[in-house]
Length: 134
Image (tube, rainbow, N blue to C red; front, side, top):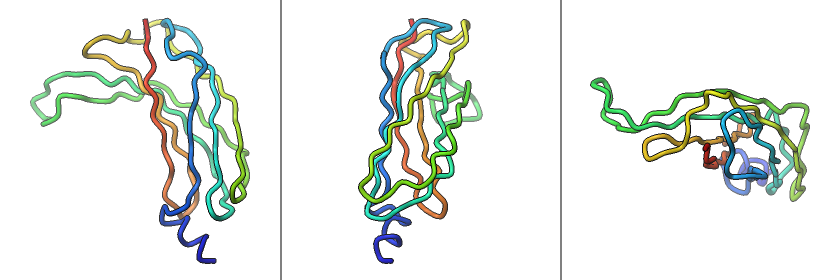
């Protein structure tokens, strides 16, 4: 019971690591990889794993104090994962298509793949990986 409570507030919770097979792709390529989930101190049900492809860009805007902004380009949802048991390791393969017009990586443009694991009534673990688009 205590382990379940601690996991719900982020102590000893599920860990996520997204591993892409190639860190550099061309516009229109498909990103291949796997999401690795590692169980914490207690069994936890997983609603879904959400992969979001983001374009992070630098632009001065009058209505913002921040020079960097993020634009969500696409989302892939992995579901039917079930419960991850305490200490268990699950590997979930994925494919993520990109558009032929995807922004190329340069000094002011970056592509990020953000992974969020949706766990009911708990802190949602996340991972973020940079992808070079040439």
